[in-house]
Image (cartoon, rainbow, N blue to C red; front, side, top):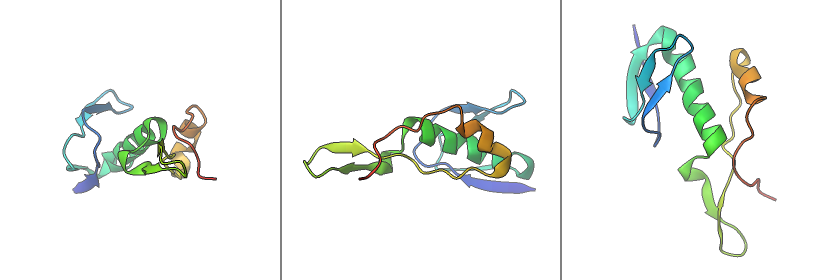
Length: 92
C-alpha cells in the first residue's frame, strides 16, 4: 500500500535508518506505508535544524528574521530532537 508525503520546498535525498535514500525534491512523494513516518520525520527534522522558508518574517525593525520550525515529534522520534538545536529566533 502507498502513502503520500507532502515535502514542501526541501530538495535532494534523505537517508533512512536502513541506508536507503529517498528523493524528496517533488512537492509530494508516494512511499510505502512502512516508510511514511520515518520520511516525514526526516523532512521535519531538516526544517527543525535548518529552518523553513515559510517561517521568515519581518521583525519590528523591518529586518527579515528566521523563526523556528515548530515540530512536535511522535514519541518514537522524540530522542532525535535532543541532539539538534532549532534554527531561528523565537517571537517575543
